Length: 105
Image (cartoon, rainbow, N blue to C red; front, top):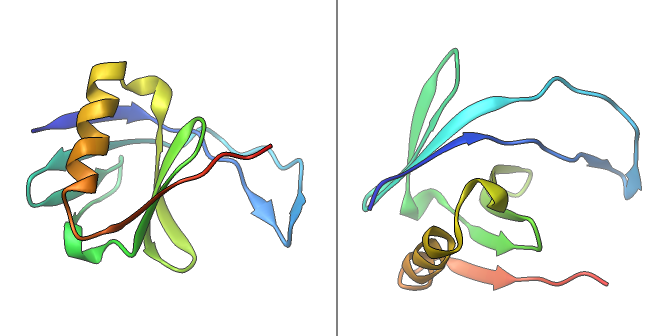
């Protein structure tokens, strides 16, 4: 399975308070393969094996692939159709990575 993701926009929270800081859109690709995820931007690329991920959170509009306590790859759900989202969920659940689906009120 190979998925190519184009644009992701991040929201930043600092000390529990949402700050209105405007950042340029960060454009990158995430390529999902059986052996891991490759992050590619204009400057560099890096491949993470599935063992590099600590936890994967799914929230209403995003998937967060945490590689450390403070660092995550962010995948916006709108770039995937429903079938690809379901395949990704199924694939993640079949790995040994902790997966959590969160709903916020």
